[in-house]
Length: 265
Image 1 (cartoon, rainbow, N blue to C red):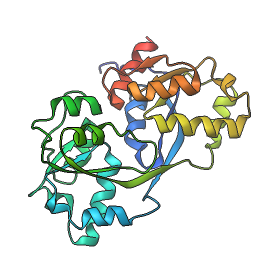
Image 2 (image 1 turned 180 degrees about the vertical axis):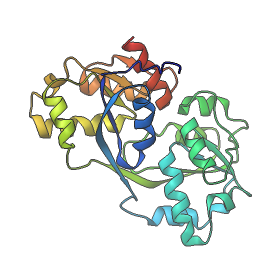
Image 3 (image 1 turned 45 degrees about the vertical axis):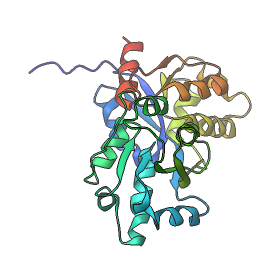
């Protein structure tokens, strides 16, 4: 039988992510030999006030484009549309849908909808630079996170003459605690790498680590590699943790797996 390649064998890796989205990502890393420790850094739910979202959804068929920057936006909009006897699949017959990244496109595909536009690079700047038509005169719906997201897409489309309706479709909140097994591996200073998938996972991880370990929390990670999914996450990580050891070249979890393998081999 061919030898199975396990380039991350004996590596203890912490993945910071929402609990609901952990299993597929863990499998990516464990299949390459890593020992994964869960660190749910985000709880995802509806925004504090659903009225703006419901107002937008009540007239969703009047939009020309919906632009999703995250899988969470897709999930919560599709779920809420059920209150209007509709779905994103139904809406896609009349409205074009753009997504920022590959994972977001995949989530849309799971609902039976193919994105009308996915930019060549999975960042907001690439969507803006490569958008297939002028924004002038468009009515654009932008579901987004309640706090902590970027305003770049909305601002650029408004500047190009679009009428943009930007509303909170979901919120990401900080969990209450870190799993005991993860606390123990941090305490023993045996963490080889921590994977960050967004600026908010960086911020919430730091809050939870300080809550658990006190003011000296950062010292427990002196020997750990910090891996980030893209430029915005790196920016936050450098600000909060003081460094980034490696940023994914492809802004996906597969990209993070690639840099993890590269940094340890």
